Image (cartoon, rainbow, N blue to C red; front, side, top):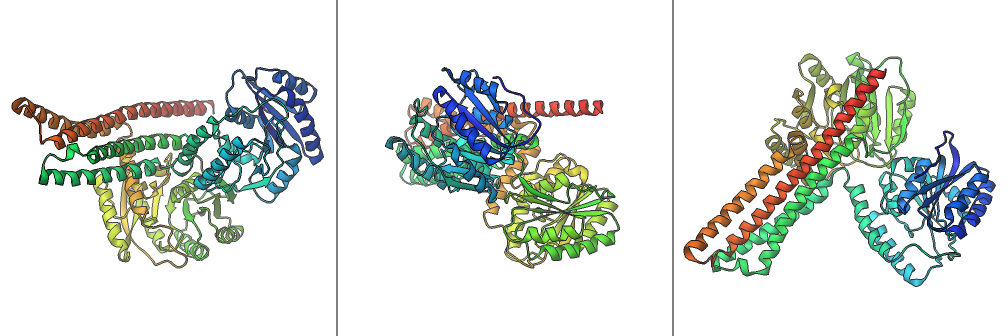
Length: 640
């Protein structure tokens, strides 16, 4: 692949156009496009990507490029696909607004001013809608079905995902990478990062030259890519929530059916192995076991992805963050907020009184986790009067773990305080926790809430007991948000999904010392809780992730292999016993249940053993990445 060197000067508009065998259209498209772009009065560039054309297309664009320095050209040696072409074009583009369009003259350049007007309304991505399509019926009908399903599944209300005519703000393309055939799902990927998506009707012309490069298989591949989009948006930071829920549901249903049929076997004898329902139950158990193991493997990969920064949180605004104070703060207080307009100002006033008594330099970092009320404006007003107040505004609600992670990234204090923004944590307790961590040989201190109302105290105690049993860390209140950490505890920590409540567990597993102090738990001053009963099963799955990553991240085969050998060992014993019965009696009539169970356990055990081997390969990759990072850091320090 040959590419022009990317310029250093940013311009107003970049137009990215992939093409494949469009020699008749390219010159006419260029002339129309230049006329429209000149009339906008903005600086521009046009980037053509030759996706392995076999006709004279490359030479046509090459001649245009030689006479116009605003034209850039990328050439692929083979047909790599539209997504690859767009991705390379996005890398080269330097415009603040980036357009994409097809090269077949079906998209009308005259629509560009309409896109720019829509962008000015505050939208980050504007998609074209071919309201009146000049395509045959056999293309229009499946396209409508595809768009309806995609809109329903992704939640993005667009009429035409397949329209290649779109306009993007630069920052979207800096965050989103496209491959395969994910280019049609960029609006869904952008929306999940919190960007505003708009749509305008555009004129659509009948194809003037050549023929379409897409067939019916495009829609089949599109539906498969839709599953990829669901995984990359809703579950990329906690894949066990997808695979785990499905897996445990399958295991539960399969187990209940087996218990039911076993009861019939005991009562009537010789029934289970002859019923089709018994084979269905075995299939459910095997599928469930495999889904759970896949989910745990996906958590390994997600953890690596977070560590190398592949899944960054989209930050919309930062207030006072880049401002250098005269003194570096000793204490940073990080407070995630989501729709807390009735609490943040009172929380700020009470907190600064307490911190002033500590007599140390401090900063308060509010992380607005996608609030839709007036929380940000209230915080902005506070920060304009007090430079010690910093604000990070996320583009959408990413969750408390992501909000804390963003706060950790910008906090400068040696002691890091975390607390909720709903005033249920008592600001007066911050002073006691700070005194405890300074006076005791510990690395972090956790609040332990007292007077938690019924029935939440019951569910909380059960959950905390489960955490202590499975993790081996004796902590009585995992869910309390009031904590104080030495900076070294959170340095290099990957926090995502729902792992924020297990931060003390992860830190303790890493060898850091801690203690707990009783703290007050107040009723909500304003607003409502953001958590429901779904938090409990999600918490259990997150606990599995923590146990896996903290206890077996460097030796996954020890966990999966042990489970696999145990399960398959039981299955092997069952099968051996039936073999002996067959040899002695000449028949296993009436033992169909045991035979089916034995085979099922053997297969399930082999699944988990295989998952462990895959985990070892993932761990080897993780170690290699970590080693490369250490070498790179050492090299940079040496150069300094």
